[in-house]
Length: 369
View 1 (cartoon, rainbow, N blue to C red):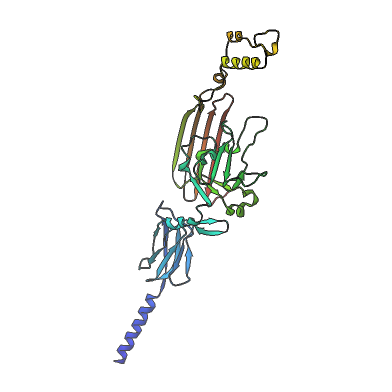
View 2 (view 1 turned 90 degrees about the horizontal axis):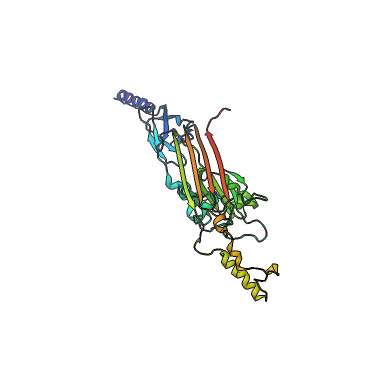
């Protein structure tokens, strides 16, 4: 009887050793959105400190025993668990965790809930501005963000725009916000001398803008210093996306006319002459006396050719824009290319604005130059 029990316990020991024996488990972690491998995913054996990270293609290899649980974690994706079975391969498809991405927002001094920062940060997406017929991007913020006042200082095409974020912050110093395009501060405002007004921001293709974020409070100053005293407008341009190549072409045409064309108008020639004659008479003179050439305004002046200067100096303006863009790439390299021709003829002769814009953006995870 003792011999039988001894054999039984020995067999149980062999079974325990076999069940606890580790093996190599491999697999690939992909995204449910595009099916591409996700690099940098943490794969950990639950309850232990053993873990690895997926490579650039989303592939991993880890030592684990049958019955143990593997935990997969990645920022912006829902955490998942998988039990090690007899198979040596475990592939995981991770789902995006959009709720967590929307609950917090990164500011200069830490991370806080989005609800707590809605008054200090405003955002405008490309879908909100893509159909606005404006030459300069800052004009597209009109009525889009609370606390941001946009005023056109000139009706000339391509002219600079006055923007005030939460009012005027200085009496004799600058009051314009700081513009940052893809992390690089840029010039803004009036850039012309002894000529028509011009604006450096008007050279950017509005359809290349992915989003515009307006920082209104001290968070802006903590990042960019004193230059951000009047707020910061962060402009992010479009980038290529992995997948099949996409080519887009858009063209638009519009016209513009004088506002209040049926309201205020200049005096006609007859009205102007009557005005001058009345002034001479009220001063005690005679507008029909040819000896007083300074105040000689006879009605015979109307017998000649009368020019309608308002009609001669104004016209029906036009706005024409044509754009071609291409994007695509793989999980390692993405590209975006766009070309734009824009021609804006103002309602006053000589107030035209034309531009050619070409932009190329290449992103690659591993590039050998």
